Image 1 (spheres, one colour):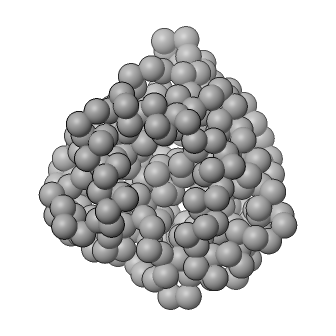
Image 2 (tube, one colour):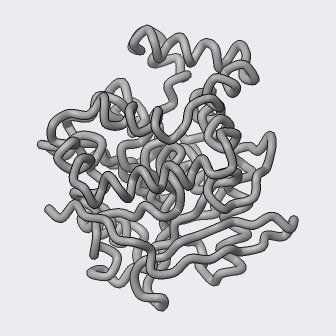
Length: 289
């Protein structure tokens, strides 16, 4: 599989209704089928998916910096619902309609929030950060993660201060340090490592507030009703992924009506970059595009 990434073909910023800016990057034909990409933890809009996938399928892939990350304006105290509103505003202003959405890693719950709010269409959640605060996982979390979840619930401001102190180097160490060899073959390729570490530096360009807010939201209880989701949802996990979900999405898939769980052998959390074309193809079919 092709695991390369390429630089965005178009970069821009859109002024939202309240005057804040949401920054975006695009790949693929400008008149292609719009697909929204919600990137993973602390990464900016500039890190795409498997190279050539958008072009091959005629997709106009639009990646967005969440507020406070990259070039998007900060929004202190923002919520999942606020991000869904931002995406709906962006879609109206850029003629995206109600686009299908790809949410990667920590971007997945934000993509789900957009889906639950009706701002986006069918969803592909790839290496999705699970709702680790859900009672189903009370006895399934490793001690370190359980401690962070409990701290986030008891003292969200204190937890945010801890997350705020992390930076691009620490994030890259976490990604590469816990990765299986199958992922490292992707992550350690020179072009990919350069693109990923650049996206992390851009993600922290305004400091750590954006990432900290994301993480407090993602590690807490999710306030949207997954049982009320009415559009198709596909979850994609690498079989060797031991990081993103305690049960590689089995519980999460069971909570979303009609959700399909795909487990890809021979890869872990890097599945977005090794199987991008398959992920997009299924998403377009499920969305009816």
